[in-house]
Image (cartoon, rainbow, N blue to C red; front, side, top):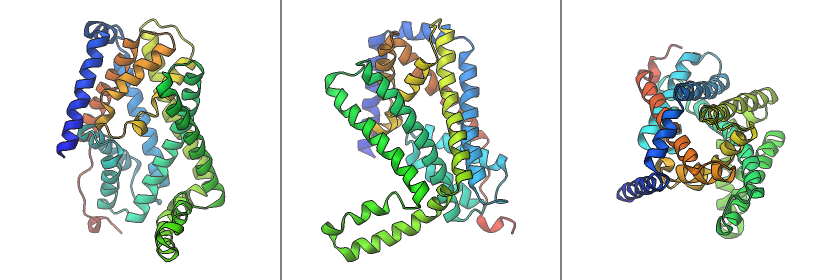
Length: 323
C-alpha cells in the first residue's frame, strides 16, 4: 500500500509536469474551445459501456438477470475502476462478486466476464496493432522506444492468432504454456496444474467455440471501440483540426497499449497524457491537443463513474434469488 501510494503521488507529479510543459492556459483554452463536445463524450462513453454490458447479458445463461440489471452492474464496475485507480484488477472481480450476489453461479459469472474482457481485449489489440504500426512508419517514437514498441506489435499479433486458434481448436490459452514447465518443476506437478487450468478454462473455451457468440461479440466490441474513435473525431472537429477519420483511428489504436505498458501506474495517470501528446504530435498536431484529449477523457469517465455508483444494484444474497 505505501508503495502504491508513492507511485500514485509520482504519477500526479508527472502529470503536473506534463501540463506545465504544454502550458496550462493553452490546454484550458483547448478544452473550452471544444464546447459541447464534452457532453457528446459522456454520451458516447456511456454507449460504449452499454455495448459491453450487452455482451455480458447475451453471454450469461438465459433468465438469470435482465439487461437493465447487467447494465447497472457494468456501470457500477466502472465506478470501482475509476474511483480506485486499479483498472480491471479490482473492477472485474467486483463485477463477478455483484453477479454472484444476485444469484449467478460463480463458474457462469467467471466465464462470462472472461469472455467479454477477452473479446474487448482482442479488438483493442488489433486496433493497437494497426495504430502502432502506422506510428512506427511515421517515426513517431524515439530510437530507445521504437524497439520495445516493435516487440509489442509482434506480441499483439501473436495474441490475436492465439485467441483465434483457441476459438477454432478448443485448445486453451494458458494450459499449453503450463505444460512447457515440465522440465523445470516436473511432469507430475505440471500435469496436476494443467488439469486445474484446463477445468478453469473450459467454460471460456465453450463460449469461444460458439461461432454465433464469437461473431456477435467481435462485431459489438468493434462497435464499442468505434465509438471511442468517433469521440476523438468529434473533439478534433470541434477544435477545427480538419482531419481524415484515419487520424482519430491511429490515435485510439496507439493509446490502446497504455494499460498494458503502464499497468503499474495507478489509472495510467501521467502516462496516458504523455503518450497522447507523442501520438498527436506524430500526426502533425500540437502535443497539447493530446493532453487535452486525455484530461477530457478522464473527466467524462469520472462523470459516468459517478452515475454508475448512483445506479449500482442493491446487494442481494444468492439465496434470495427466485428459483
